[in-house]
Amino acid sequence: AFSRVRAASASARDAGATWTRPSWDVRVLFDGDCPLCVREVNFLRAQDGGRGKLDLVDIASETYDPSSNRGVDFETAMSTIHGITNEGEVITGVAVFEQAYAAVGLGWVYAFTKVPALSNAATALYDFWAKRRLAVTGRPTMREVMRLREQREAAGGRTACAAATNADASGSERS
Image 1: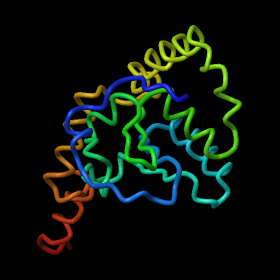
Image 2: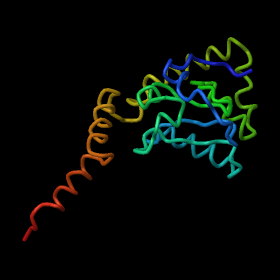
Image 3: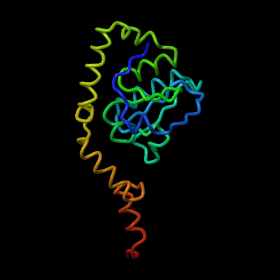
Image 4: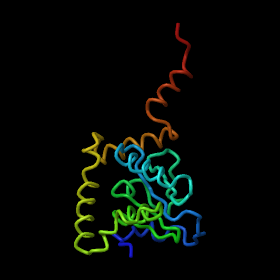
């Protein structure tokens, strides 16, 4: 049925050996700093209509926790879209879209992926996009994204601007 584009990393496969089956059908780990990703997620959220079939998790959020997401760390999640089935299986790429669309009653959109040649073409097209999405959406390189994230984590989850503002506010009063 649903293809598995890539095997999950060892840490993602091994994380959280016990899994309590949740109420949602699929959790989608998405990049909330990517405007096109957010557009797709907003579409899926609207199609879900509050039924809870999807659990949409923003990996760019300062509260993102890999341990709550089968060990999928930020850098791994940034490489391609990741999802988690309600059985705890980590899926990536086109398989995430297949399951998310099926969960909201739009499985027919990805029905073409049942044809192996079309599935392979969709995977190649998505992989091409995933490798270039930062540049296409006007964002910094992955190296820079990681550097900025490390800075934010070192600042206790605050952005560099917020940390500087707080430091200014706690400093001497200005006339």
